Length: 128
Image 1: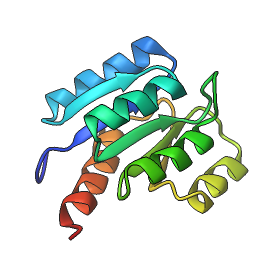
Image 2: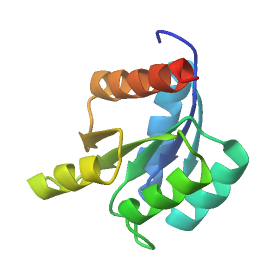
Image 3: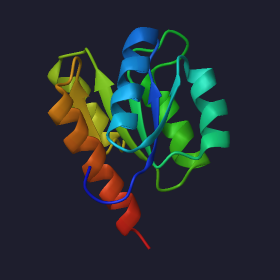
C-alpha cells in the first residue's frame, strides 16, 4: 500500500465475496469491514465512518445508487466505488452521474481493486 491506510466498508450481499475483499484490504493495510445489505451498510457506516466504500449496485433490499445518496448525506466526503457485475454501459454512466468516485466490474482483479482503493484513499487524505 502507498500512503496512509483508510477505513474501507465493503457492501455486498454475496457474503463470501465481501469477506474475501475485506481480507485483501486488511492484508494491504486498510481497516476494513463488511456489510451485507443496504440497511446494514447505513448502520455500519454511522459507527465505522469509512473513508471509502466499495458498493455493490445490485443489493436485494435497495439498489446501490440509493444507498450511495444516503451515504453522501451521512458522511460528506466519503468516496464510494461502484463494484458491480452489471456490464451495461448505462450503469457506468449512471454511476459517474450519481457521484460514484469510480466503477469496477466484478470480479475485479486484485491489482485493479487495490489501485482504485488506494487512489480514493489518497484523495480523502489529501482533502482539507
